[in-house]
Image (cartoon, rainbow, N blue to C red; front, side, top):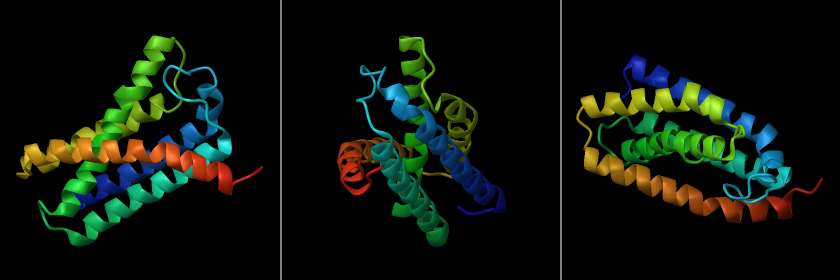
Length: 164
């Protein structure tokens, strides 16, 4: 699904995703030292390495879906899994952590203003176009689990590769 509006939304979503990751890169490592309930303390080098890899994955998934351009293809579901994961990321952990800790969780503003509304709009456009909602839910949950399972290994790898 690559009409001009959907294509523009995909590009805007990537920009919002990137801004969100930049916000987290700047403030989350320090915040993580005080938020042990929600985030294991992470050093800046570990976090930035992981964020770079996650950002690259987001771009690759989006580009693959744009190139394939087949409604309902595996690439569509992987892409929607990514978009849905970023929407969920707004609620858990960002909003929940901010409320429960009574302290701003880095990434909340960009998640609320960019990632959540754009993910809702993009997913709604695909649903209206007839995407299978059951597969959509599976894609979002699967992509979320995969990305969450990559974080700790990426933090460890970042710690080994980047020293400063």
